[in-house]
Length: 337
Image (tube, rainbow, N blue to C red; front, side):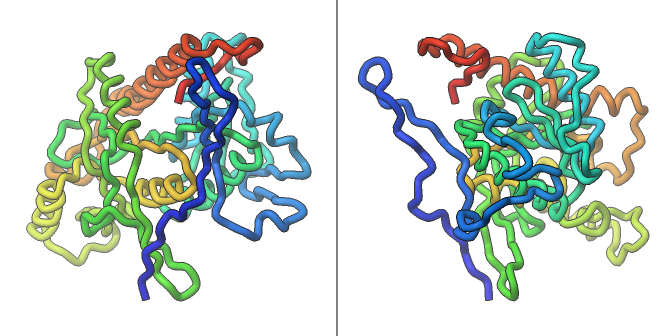
């Protein structure tokens, strides 16, 4: 039996001290929806090689304001090095350390208020990472966190190299939902993303006009081959005509790119009070073919496009935070979120 899971009335906002003009300063904390965590003597974040007893999580991560996740470990390390340069931090960044060095499942780098983490490929891999990441942010007492998935995807009816900012994450039936099997029930969760954040990212993209950026639906599938209608997998039970009919119906429904993580990402972040966005570059137009055959240097440049957009967004947010922050002794990095 399918169940629809709704966000309860519990709030994750704390009305802090009264600011200028008598306005309350509200902080958005990350919360977890699991009553059993409070009774645990220790929480071991096994796949991140971190824990509440072995590490001082608030000291290590309490200043995090931006979390950027992506499938490839190398890409997320490159993003961390890029952010180190863009934020003008000391050193070359070449000595940036993998915080999860004790495990080979995920890779994590911290650059000032920015956390860069790999999540592997597909819904199972990113969901495991998200469970432990969200608990990490909760234990670290992080507030006002923005989380963005930076990825690659297949485009639909748009030029390769286009950057798609997801306005709605949909499943293979073009529905804005994620179906999670829990015990012997199917629980349906909303995949609504923060519309204001998507619009802010789109406006920010206008400052980098040398590549096309658009808002559109992102379709999330459970695999790369059959689930995405590819004709080049080890198994294929459908015709070219049926493939094209399906992809054209997806385009008509508003889908502009296809990947394998956005629905569970949107659903989990929404339930835990995280403002989330998905920003992916397209490597090909799936209406034209299935295989990615671009030269390596072109692929590298395409993959840097979402990173450039997110870097500009983060710097813009931090500048805005510096302008509006008036409290004495405030940290070097403050964000108005």
